Length: 133
Image (cartoon, rainbow, N blue to C red; front, side):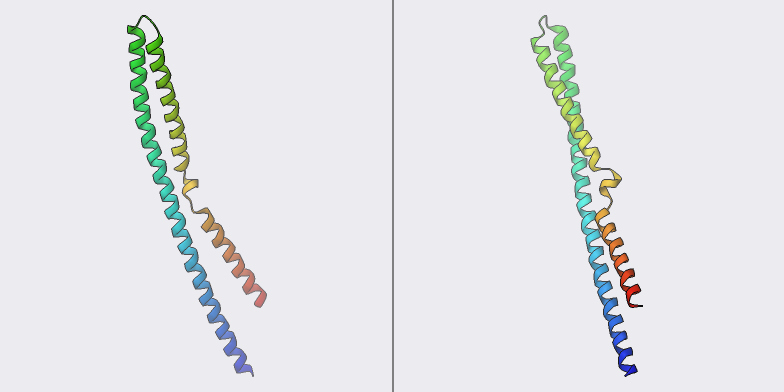
């Protein structure tokens, strides 16, 4: 009877190790997927930064044109209109810059969900081994 129990323990231990291996492979796949998602978000952030730079350059050109038009014109209507457009583009660039920068923080790129799941799995394994000991 004692030998049968030892074989069952060995089989249970092997099954447990196999299940832990499957669990960790799944968690590693989750980490990879989350890192890929975060890299995609970083790519979008970089595109936003590039668009913000283009808009800022355009806004600077329009503001310069507005200043020239304002100085050259005796009336303010054409220059004021160009100034309003330039300020609006500049504000748009500032908004895109802020949004793009927020997507590139190290906290936003860190795989927090996967780390949280791994910690929970380790705690579950600790509890499972303590209960059966």
